[in-house]
Length: 101
Image (cartoon, rainbow, N blue to C red; front, side, top):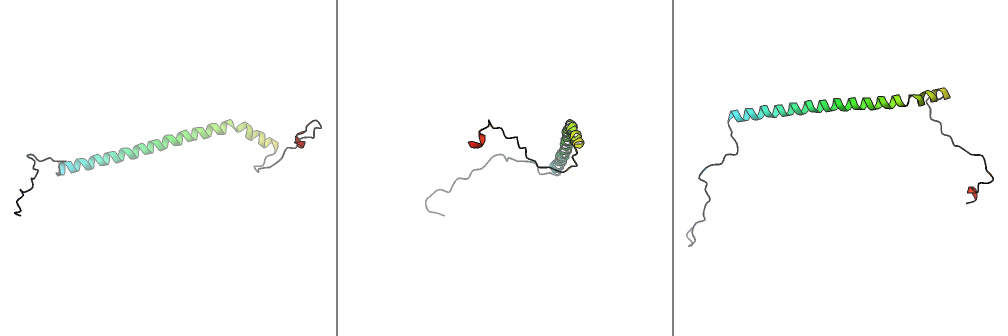
């Protein structure tokens, strides 16, 4: 390529930069560290699940304990577990003019 221009400059480095070793030792260390990280993550997730289950059981137990009087009162009233819809109608008061509004 002789067109009167000088050839383009090439950038060269005096020392090679290695991003990581590629030997069997570094690969085995990477595998061992990966296994350790995965096992630790699995153990933490199981621990977190157990803690959340325990907290949920405590909250549900507390709610169940606090509403026992209401359930006892409903059984004494004759509640057989079915829902009853009802409407409360108050006696007509002649002084009340809300119906005329």
